[in-house]
Length: 504
Image (cartoon, rainbow, N blue to C red):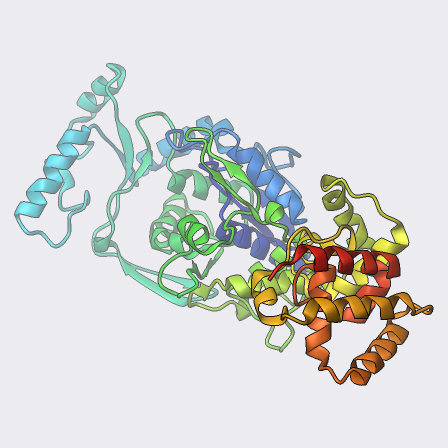
């Protein structure tokens, strides 16, 4: 059975790169009738952030990535929180020591720094704790078994390091990147168990993936350098490794480097799924949900960052993504994030919703403005604006004039359209409008255009200032549809107010 996991660390808010990793794991599991597991890797107690785990869970639920096993729902391979599995890791670390694949090291931070300084002064090309340098340090290779035991029993701090073999060629196949080759001489004796009594990511990750029967490890490119060590750990335990697939990075809009929160702050777009407030600093960051993105749009945005279906189709539902997803179509190179394209995706998913759905989503915005309105009127407003908005809130910002008169008039529009004779023309136009009995869009357009032609005026000279008076700006939905919807009495009232308000 296909069993995949999303294994984030609760060290802060979930980046959209992490959410994309979760999505690709989810799609692969559902496509192959497998299981999608959430595992919280909280062994780094120094970087643990309160509330981060809850944030991760809420983010996954918001976008609809339901997992089959996890810390809050349980499952047959639990617990799914690594801090609850520490004794298990300790037992397996001991197995590695007994097999000669790991050893105790008692070096202090100062002694480690002194070693690196010696290597720098010697202009050594490799500054690692490995088979070349471990003989100079305080560890199981330089101490007797009795001395090691005595130090441990005395409560001296120690770590457990991996015994990296010398000059070993490590070859592993990655589904996305093909064959990966690394020589062990370029790797160090990584710490597997820390002095605080917690395992490092490397040890806990391998043990959990094995015990949870993970068939495919689908994770970000940043973990590719860890792959050789992980393969050797599987070899040390004599376990069959899962298949690996390392996803490409999500890059800045200019393609230079990994997308960061700073990029979002500078360019005005979110990089987290939900709002986040740092519990230590109080610093706030807006999320896609609060920004106004639909969860299905976020899923679509992330799916197209590094994967393509091999067709021209760009808009997908989650079910369509499940049906078409394949790791074979995931690219190796980084995927540039395009903020404009992200907004476009949201617009396309908004357009797929019914008028009734959009009205229900827009109601809270109207309520926040203290507006009460008729349902059928609201439906007609939605229909007029539906193709002009990217976010729900824009039904208000781009269409407030359907619910209340403008309180100001666009300065650039006035400068261009409001001439000395405009007030007189508008007052004459008001009289014409008051005479129109059949106040429907088609009839308003016919009557007013005939009137404009009879006065030998240009349409722009009349209709641009009319729009300004009615809605406050010079661009918007079809003018005559808007006039019909606002109604004759209100249109006349706005013309009178505007002409008396605007001074030249």
